[in-house]
Image 1: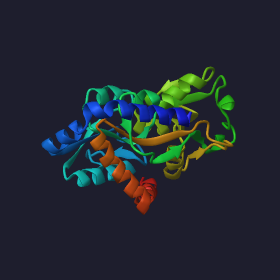
Image 2 (image 1 turned 45 degrees about the vertical axis):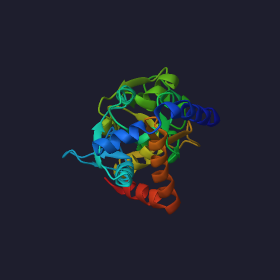
Image 3 (image 1 turned 120 degrees about the vertical axis):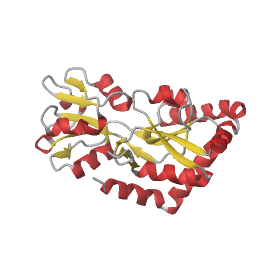
Length: 256
């Protein structure tokens, strides 16, 4: 799967380079602003405060990219269910904030170097941490699975949960409160989000699964301009090589 996905990303890059060389980066510099699409609801990568400001590991990286390009940074709110439409409409230059590399997305843009490798795991009330230890254990009549709308979590639930009750909670920022309040039993999401939510909510625990249910990769989704792709890659590669990305992610995981 990883090999096919990498091939899809490379193919997309190869087929779009000649047609779009430099155009998007030129537009960014002409307007003096980098437009970054982000959901603002996925800790520790991106989160929007009540005052409208953003924080998170990928928010820090967005600021570094804007500084490298010597332009202002402007965040464009998007959602998991509308992100692809917003991207193809050109509403932002780069999507950042825990974006999973998917073939359907690779067909429409180009991905940066991988920033994080993860996999789907369950989170539940701590009393149930030994109960939901497999997809089979979760997919049982009477089990209440909660998902956020759009994105890879909903895709996973549609593909794998057939007998349990699946409820779509419209606000990703408060979806874990549904488990705490006993309106849902379990959510299957990216492992880093599971660990973060368990760290900030003592009522929640990662369930004792022997391994993640999937393998997934996080990266930044870029409009297919090879010059812009190179600039984003330079920021990612530099942060990885210096250790800044690891430190930034660790700090973001500590934030409430």
